[in-house]
Each structure stands twice: as structure tokens, then as C-alpha cells.
Length: 353
Image (cartoon, rainbow, N blue to C red):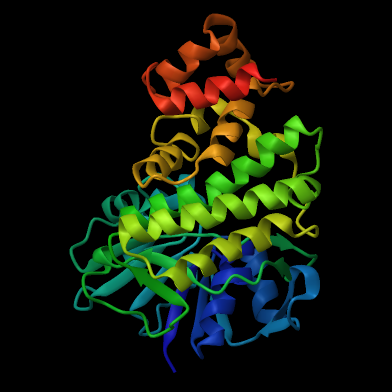
């Protein structure tokens, strides 16, 4: 049985990553700076993960040990998964540098949706006997009192295969992906684009609760139509298998429609000026759909709703709209030419309101 070190025993580290590892018969070695949490893990010796919507039976994680940095042990593990906030990566790197054995090569994966986390951690460790990859965490986890966790039943931790330099984790639930930048585009155009469909069209229809918007019959119909065309063009552009992309999209829909995950339309719609960027989650897939001659009307309606969007707290967006016309937003923020079909389609949806 292999051992894997998980740095960070918070809700993602213990509620998602530890579960994925134990499902593959891996022993988990937790390292966390919180001595009280470490003591509780060692005293209780187990914790329970319940799944949103009761889609499966609760799962008990019990094959682990836990340490603070003062008595940390890597216990012959060669794989380390770091699940801490991006602001803590440098401190973790400096602590890891003190306990890595000089004559052994370590493979490290950052499980944090930060900007270039592998680069930050590699520089903080400052040693040559490491390969540092990065993963994108899709799984939503919520603490449920004590050590227990409520979690989405997400099946993988996808990471950058190229940064692992040929190493393949024993746990099949840790999934190295080649050409990871393409995978991040795939996520942006699948997950994030669909989230915008729900958020902005949901706002337009008067919803404040995100799951209520996601389960609206009309929005569901539009969401499915957008998934159908987006799946096709992502497979055509990047060579993904049809069934794999459809599973990827279905996992996102299940998450968005889950009423047990409490979320708001406002949180998902905030900062439209960022989401409307030229290669971002709305305009990016619209361009790809037009490239392959597919119907982009759902995302074009979403773009129009995003431009019209208004909510308390959106001071930066309100300032932009006070300064720029809708047409200027489409050219200056969305990067569209005034004579382009995409520009004209979105303007038509705006003007029809």
C-alpha cells in the first residue's frame, strides 16, 4: 500500500483529496500547521464524508496519520499533494524544504486554484530533487461539524501531466492530463461558461438563489442546448473523446443544479467586466462556436445579459457602464470588431430588451 502526504487537512484536503486516495487504497499522511486539528485527527482516527443529495452512501476516511510541521514525517512517500490557500504556498514550500531527503526525488501536486501555484511552490522549496505539478479542484466541500465533511461526489483530481515529468500516481483518481493549458480552456468553456448562462440569465429572470435559477425549466433547456454545441466544438478543437467531454459537462450540470449547495446568483455573476474578456468564459466559447459554424445564440444572449447586469456592490462595473456605451464595452472589453457577426448578434439581444 502506497503512502501519500497531504499538506493541509482542511475541507478540501481531508474531504476530497483524502477520500480520492483512500478509495484507491492509499494511506494518507496529513501535515497541517493547526495543532488542534492534528490532535483531533489522531484522537478520532476517522471522519465521515456525506455527499450532496445523498447520491451515495457516506464514506469513512480512516487510513491516515497526522502531524504538525514540528514532527512532520514523509514516511517514505514520494507523492505530496499540497492543499492550502495560495497565500500559504511560500510558507509550505519553506517548511517542506527542511524535511525533503536530499537523495530522493519527490513529486508534488498543488491542489489550489491559484495563479501559477506550481511555480510559487517550486521557488519556495528551492531544491532540484522535485517535480511540481498543479491541479484544478472542481469538488465543492463544506465542513459539517467536527471533522466531518459534506462533499460533491466528484471522481478525479486532474493535474498537469507534463509537470510530473513522466511520473504517474498510483491512485487512478489522481488524473494527469497532457496539454493542461488546453484542459483549463476546456474547464473555462464548459464549467465557467455554463455558470454564466445560469447566473446572468437567472438574474434577468429575477432569481437570487443560484440553484433555483439552475433548475428553471427554460434555463435548463438553454443550458442543455449550450452544452450540446460546446461539447462538439471542444472535441473538434482539442481532440477530446465525445463520451469523456459529455461526462465532464454532465458533472458540471449536476453540481450547478444541486439544491443542497447553497449559492447565490450575485456571487456567480459578480465582476462581469472580467467574465466578458476577449478570451474569457463567454466571448471565448462564442468565438469557437462561430469558428465551427455552430449556434452561439445561448452564449450571445448570456453576453447581452452580462452587459445589462446590475447589482449592489458592483461599483467597478457601474463605473465602466457610466463611461462606456454598450458598443464600447463590446469593443474595448470583449475585444470584438464592430462589423463582426458576434458584435451584431449581441447588440441585437441588448436592444431587444
